[in-house]
Length: 446
Image (cartoon, rainbow, N blue to C red; front, side, top):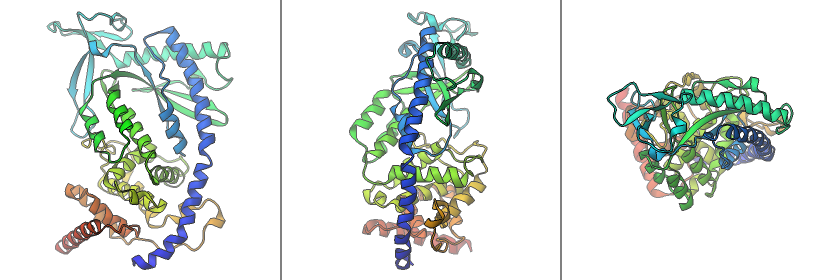
């Protein structure tokens, strides 16, 4: 079967590269649109800072622009607003995760009674006095819900000021589009013909590390400078509820993605292709709920851990399938572990119809040609489906036995989809061992 697949696979190479070329042709205009929208928002945030120095402006936004240029989807982008606060002086009160698997641990930001330099964070608009009279150390807490309310009022005033003084392009944004969500403020910014939605998030920057950052060093082949930046940045805290904060992994994940871009191969190209297919096919041009760019980014990061060899990413179609088999397995088992906090299932409580999404992703993996068509002339004879109905049972195995979460297991899946083109004898032997194990399992069950 592998020999007959070679000519068909060669015929499809141009289709994948045509699709990638069409995506790349939009990267520069998308980056320019993002830059204009970001400049507009930064002008507003500079005014916010002038009105209230507790809120800083973060100019180190190159990673967001880089990610936006990779995307075809229109999911909102985070814009962090750092708080001017000495985190070394704060009391970080860890509360633990609400339930196992739900996500990062929650905490409260306590203000010590004897603290110097935190007076501006003890004002009623952002602070709640502690009800525990017996607590000799803490006099109260910085409350994320209150911080968000102050920030919203400042943004409205700043937008009005910037429009009145022509500091932002006419019609680029309107205070009416500013909506207060539970954990962020949402603002729509016009840039040319494109509208970009930003989620504005207050963030507390801590220099201390966290256990999650230790997992960064498991990523193989990353440049030393990338690891140094991630570990040196420390940990960010963002609102988790109106009362609580939580650890944010946005910065290390963005740095990891940027680091993958410095490696040889088609890692980021595979992400761009799947994000476009997700937007156009799996989400009906963005009209239906479904997977986000962040979900796909997590799948790529896991695929990069499981497939560290350069030859896995040397060929475009094969690179896409490395991420696809990982994604299919996560959808089948309804569990996408966070790369830095594996106990956190990113699909838990997402409110999506994972069964329906699985069917669409599997259909694409079996016959990708229809979704890759950009123009009617690009579609020749459609090859038969690559897989039969047995693959879903195979994809379920890691749910019942986590020891299947190995490169050899995913190599079996790649072979099923006719894209395992690795000559390494040890990998072939390990794959055959897993294949025999699944055959035995199937015999026992029948």
